[in-house]
Length: 323
Image 1 (cartoon, one colour):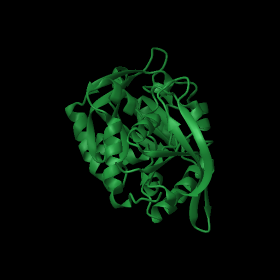
Image 2: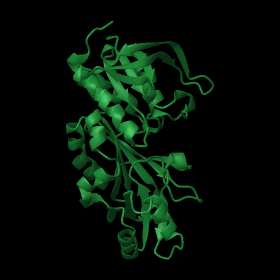
Image 3: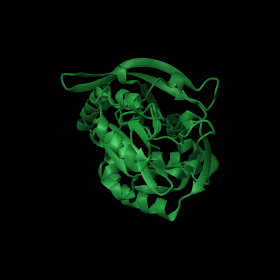
Image 4: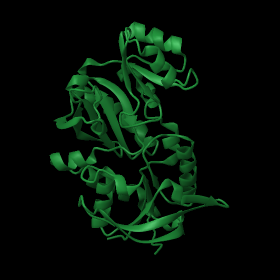
């Protein structure tokens, strides 16, 4: 068994949803294989004379809602002391996030695989990238022009508007052409015409759930985590209070994912979460896709094990004994 040093860049581990957090499950699986875990937040990373480094905390993890981690020590180390790095920081995709990917890209230049690939995290916007597969998408407009957005809304009658850099259902609005709040929502969302947003035709099938499908190393997991909105919300997102059901993929689900998967693999996006409502592609999540825990707990396969297996396979010769 290889003693792999795994670095994890994530948000504050003190505030995760312990029993549902996919990053924690990844850490638990890696730890069970004898890997050493090093935890970092974005603010811990630095770049000095081209050398990427971080204040790293050696960490142990447990699946216990009262105590789920233990920090052993903190030291500043070069990122090239690690064998592999998991980039699991959540959006927003702002300038700080972009700068972080540049530091991680320097680690790649020193031979350390970073998953998902930093340059592709910059390139693949989780909302906009669906346009590369527009044949599967609902009617969509990306614009900062309020008159254009209002014209699109009149055309489709009912639409969802969302920011391009957020996650978890944050700042998503449902509008129809008669909504008296339309002007103020568009002004706020576009920052008075200075910020692009995405507007998509409302899909009635959201009542049956928003499907999250995982693609790992180009292979499609055969189950969808279907998130069903509560009675007082239209958003099919667990963080917004949606309930969860596990369903097998439909023929259309499989066709969409088979089309997307090769390009994701080519771009070094080892883990992606594809969101489908009805038969329509709505998002391609690559920053820190979740729902691995639901697959693990409710089906006969472990998405987490498949993912950690893929990390081992893809790192290959980069797993050198640096201890």
